[in-house]
Length: 202
Image (cartoon, rainbow, N blue to C red; front, side):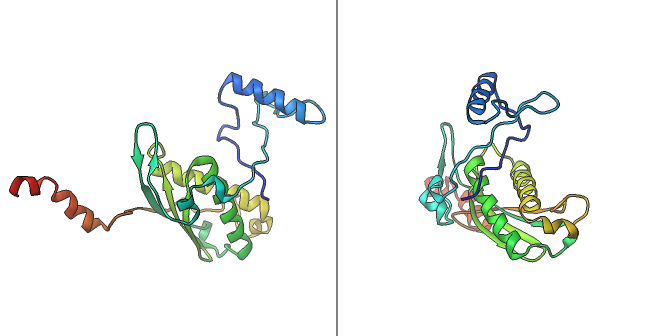
């Protein structure tokens, strides 16, 4: 079962109460009684052992199917097709890298509420079909996916480093497109243009 290696972008708990609660739990669990302090004096969230299984996703999402996501003030179905090339377009996406990418994307889905409906890998680029929520901009979705997958690929498949100098797995550029759940762009355009006309001319 994969470990839960992800931490927040800042690496620090969000509130004083959370910092206090985390530090008490960490001291109880750690043999030395002291854990998490870094040289700069900040705190890192202790790593948790969380089982990563499809039960954390909805039945539809676990089957790779989008669904309406309900929040307190919105209901959404936001789908993006993202294509990210490897750095220098090198052919580094081996079978081992493919497996790591799929494992870490499942962890990202659980932590960030970004279900991956499909992942397709080629030797030098990867396609992601993801569903997300309104608070996440497209840029943030791409940044989360690229930064966390790159870190874990280098950690779990260190042989990749000899093909990519500079410590970067992904190219800076990427492709992203919205995907309609209920129809193509042309169908949605006709649907929107026709709104109200039935009542007006009926």
